Length: 68
Image (cartoon, rainbow, N blue to C red):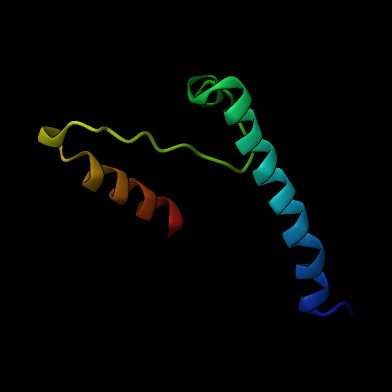
């Protein structure tokens, strides 16, 4: 039976590569273009920068809901 460290040794570099691909997409095509794409096992939380709407708190709550 493989140990957890063996799994992590394979999984982490793969996930790092996926994250870097997404960051490169944003750099090359722009944030709005990326926001229009659909990603498997990935969700986007839009941040409202309007102070009157308490955008940070809404963003933080949405993030916490997805982490649970």
